[in-house]
Image 1 (cartoon, rainbow, N blue to C red):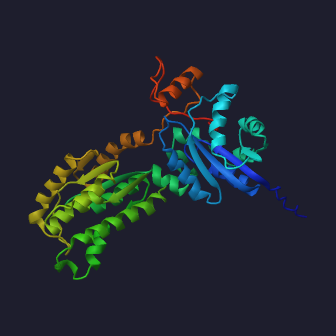
Image 2 (image 1 turned 60 degrees about the vertical axis):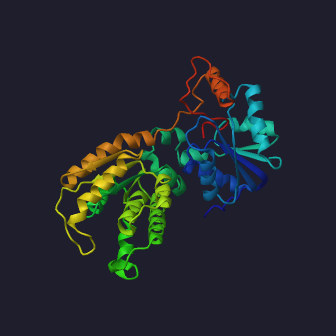
Image 3 (image 1 turned 30 degrees about the vertical axis):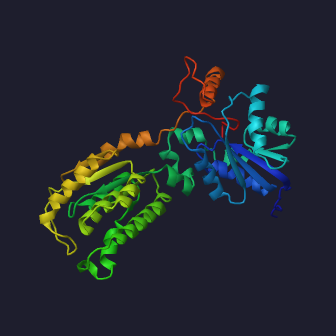
Length: 381
């Protein structure tokens, strides 16, 4: 005989708080359980000034995943010292400032929840099964994001992933390279929307290009990227062209640069540009201008890439050689991209206080490390 489903009693105003650094499936489980047991739920994102993921970004992740919760965020640079009444008073000043009404229940997976509930005059519900069902932690994800990528929601993947852009003059193998590099990296790649537009535009290739067509190409290309970034199985996406390349093709077909496209390219920079070499034979597929302009256009790509801040490499040889060169260049860049600032809770209280003073505008004391990150109440989340 099947046991009846036990529905937990729903209490008035529930509270969940943490760093969400980054937000992961364990956090989602905790919030879902709190939502089931509360008539309304507040989720507080408490960051610190030296963390490397923007506070608003973390709040937006939770809002997307849990639209029924009230999500609020604030900086909390107080030391993580659960034995100090003074530290608790600093944390509570932030926590209470974010509440729009008293809290009935505090939900957490960690011991600090009991003391927080007592100080707020609320009940504590410990969601122990979350750790057993899904024993993931922010610490583990920060240490090895790739190994725990499946624990992150689509919005988190989109913001934390890096883009590698493959570009080049006509018939330099950029599309072949993009696809092969994605296979090598075990990830997705985004095709060039401009080619699709060239095939479907009114008048075909014989009609002069209008400047506004390139705005459409940019919008569609970025939309394809954003969709793919939410789905990548690893923290990198390969793109066959991007806004910068589109701006250069605008020069070629319209006859003048477009400052708006150049600004858009500067606001949408990837982690790495991979320029495919023009040493391979030219192949006319019916859509290309011809061999006579290829080398000049390739030099234009080189000049523009050399004048912008994103690292770039020109790859030559056969496809395996090109892939190996690109992957070797990418590896250290990707490691640096996925490096999170260290949380605060492992530091001495003196060092935490020094970082707190620095965040408030006072100079660091001797011995305090300025390169680390911070947490607050909920640091273990």
